[in-house]
Amino acid sequence: MSLAVATPTVAPPRVPGLGFAAGFVGIAVLGAGLSGALPVAFSIATVFLFAGPHNWLEARYALGRLPARAGKLRGFFLVSLAGILGLTASFVALPLLPDEHLGTAYAGWNTAFVFWVATLTWMRSRTNPRFDGGWVWPLACLVCAGVWLNPLALNVALVYLHPLVALWLLDRELTRSRPAWRRTYRVAALCVPLLLVGLWWHLRDAPDLPGSDLVTDHLRDAIVNHSGAWFLDGVSTHFLVAAHTFLELVHYGVWVLLIPLVGMRARPWELHTIPAARRNRTWNRAVGGFLLFGVGVVLVLWACFLLDYGTTRKVYFAVAMLHVLAEVPFLLRMT
Image (cartoon, rainbow, N blue to C red; front, side, top):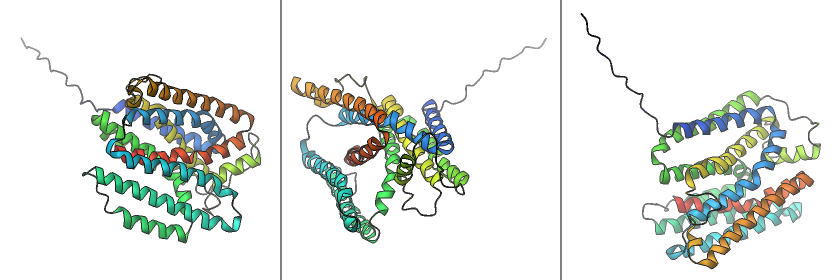
C-alpha cells in the first residue's frame, strides 16, 4: 500500500507595488496609442479634461507637503516665490516685445531662470548636508553659454522635459510613503522612453499633419507650433505632436491618478492633513478658501475652453509657466 505524500504548494513571491506599476504602464501604453493615432484630437481632449484638475491636485498635494512655518527655510521660500512670480510675469510679457528683440529677451529670461534654479539648488544644499550643491555654478554657467548661442533651445527642451518632472516627483513620493514599491515603479517607468522610441520608429517618416474636419487649421497650427515644430525643422510634425501629447498625458495621469493614490493621506477636501491649515482657524479658512477658489478656476477654465478653445489654450500654456516654475523648489524641497 503506497502512501501519497502531499506536496505543499509554494506561492510565488509577491512583487511589491505590482498593481500600481501595471496601472502606470497601462496609462502610458494607452496614451502612446491614442497620441500616435489621433495626435491633434487627443491633444485637444487631454488638455480640455485634465489641464485644470491636475493643477488643482498639484496645489493640494504641495500644501500637504509644505511645513506650517518656514523656519530656517524662510530664505529658500522667499527666493522661490520671487522667482515664480517674477519669471512667470516676464514670460507672459515676452510675446509683446518687437520681433527684433525677442531673441535677446528669451536669452535674458532663460539666463535668469537658470541662475534662479542654481541659487535654489545651492540654498538647498546649505540646509541639507546630504545634498551636494557644489557642482551647480559651473553647470549653470555652461547652460547659460548655450542659451546665448541659441536663445530658444532651452524653451523647446522645457516643453518635453517638464512632463517628466512628474515622474521624478512620484519617485520621491514613493520613497516617503511606499519605499517597497519604488524599485517596481522604476522598472515600469522605463516604458516611457521605450514608447517614445516606438512612436519615433512608427512616425519618423510620416507626412506632416494634414488638415482635419475636427479642428480649424489655425488651432492645428497652434498645437503643432507648441510641440516645437518651428524649431525642430525636418522632424515630422505628426511625431512631434504625438510625442508631446503622450508626455502630457503621462504627466496628467501621474498628478490626477497616481500621486493622489499614494501621496494624499486624506480626501483632497479634508484639511486636517495640511500643516498650514492646522495652525489656527484663520489659516484653516484661508487654505480652504484657496482650494475653493481653485475649484472655481477649474470650472471657469472648462467654460472658456468650450467658448474659445484656441485662445484659452494659448493663454493657459502661457500662464501655466507658474506651475512649471513652482515644481522646481518643490522638487528640491523633497530631495
